[in-house]
Length: 638
Image (cartoon, rainbow, N blue to C red; front, side):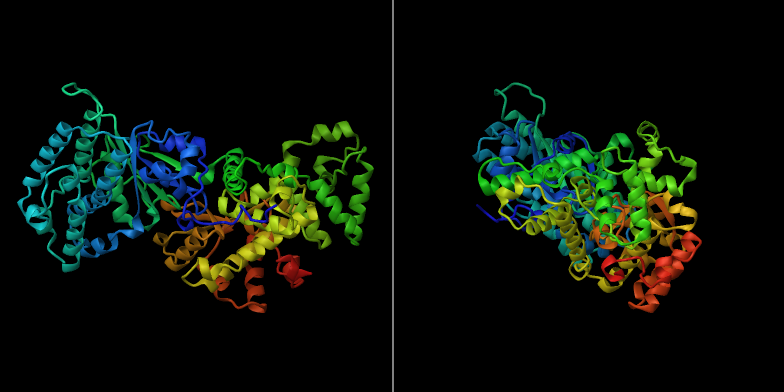
């Protein structure tokens, strides 16, 4: 028996040998020969997906080889991966800041092409050694001849990088010193026109496209009988990770490269949020259209797809521990969602007369089933629903309206009787994970610790709702202690801001004038204008930083003129929020309100800030704020 946990959340980069789970739908789309923008908050598996395309992982990683059923190179493409923060784009930007867009784009695109081309020599050496690709002497000779023709057009390039060019490998090894030459130009502030005269930069991205065509032709010729014509079959996936580091000018260079992309070179970019400009280019009269690239948003995956992803990740880790399949089924371990069952537990333990009366009325309508508590409550506070008592009539009227409001009723009941909402069931776990693999693993780790058993027993156990609630609450509270390690710039202010928003969200979701929190349930989406509208840029930076660190969830950004965001659902058990996050807007935050939340110390000043914002957003003073409870965290309100 082992107590080793398969749920410890590690970044891809921290694992010596990564254990892969490949989501079939997303991966199938990435393998298609089309440029792709892969968008998703941290922990949605972007790096794993891109690295699974790279030649070295496909060649040497046993876990990935198993996932691909030994068909790693069946589609005949070579993936080349690098991280954009690891290259010197900032250095180039400082050098070229005063140059025209045309010159800027030519040099930056050439530099990006060199970043992937300098890795191709090693890739071909390994792939040839494993007999994945074949290079005939004649194909290699033709490649060298064509490459030399390009090189000889730039006499100064030969002087800058004077190395022998006797075969394909020696030609491709010129890419690294050439990239270093550009960086040297940037450090020395060499005039850009002199650099352009000495480099084979050409039109935006031309050099990479041309060398890619020559390489594809050489590899395809190597697979054919001598003297026979063949179509170019090998292509290249250029995987650039962490595209969020690109500024607006750099992004438009990438957009231009994507717009001009053609077989066999295709660019794949990963971002934590949509690019600032996903359509603009430096090509006159041309923008990126839907047909030019696909956009895969990992945060938009369907619930069933997320369940398959996180359980797939957990199960390949479990296999790594046991050496055999012993699958995790989250539904079996945690059970299905039963809000009435949770409410029955909460009300049965409560001494509040309102709660006891509600439980008694609902129990009288139970007909042998779990008392219909939240429906009974909704009929009380919404007279228009009527007071139907028959089982058939209740089922008939258990409409979309009632189901839509069941979580609001659940939170409202708990608020009225001064009790904590309980968080338990597989459905709640998946929802509060908020489409983030890391948050799912973080919470499963807490559940595993709470179960206090070995892994084999845990996988076949059924954890009680009380233990689930305790574990999920502990996981959410622990996450709120991580601001200093996740947010490097103003972590205390970011902590205050997220804490204030979570308290405000808990209040507007569980109480309101004339029960408006029931009629418009699960509010909590905030908006903030972009700095272009005259608002403060540091507030926007903080919002985006908190979202990238997993404390907020940005729903709309970039070109819309405002940012729409909410508190991350993983914090729900700590604050008493809806486990589903928030569905409806609660209003726009002003600069003053954000600054007050950021900088107000805990205590009365913070209470006043929260109270004023709640009052403005809801039109009434919050009872919980008036009572000094601040609307959670619940442990502070007890």
